[in-house]
Image (cartoon, rainbow, N blue to C red):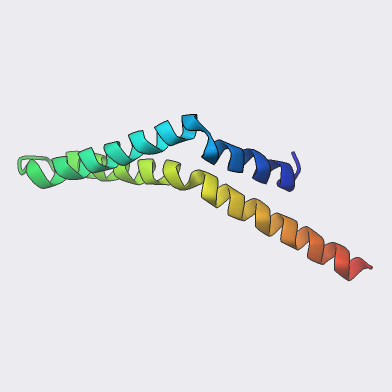
Amino acid sequence: MKPKQAIDKLTALQKSDGWKIIDEVMKQEILTASFQLSENRDMTMDEINFKRGAMWAARQLKELPDKLILKYKNDVALEVETKAKNL
């Protein structure tokens, strides 16, 4: 798939109702995990690290389309620059 096509598909994904649901669920999961960290004082270090990891993973998933769009935009810019130098 070409970078411009990927950008279009990722942009469409971000605008879709399905992605809005996923985004909202991830926000709620992050909030729930942070509340659990702050309220439960009897957690083991492993439990704390698990919750932190879950929050990190949820944030990464939420940010994935933006990161991929940026990557593909950079690929397009590099391609345009390479073509301009070759002319």
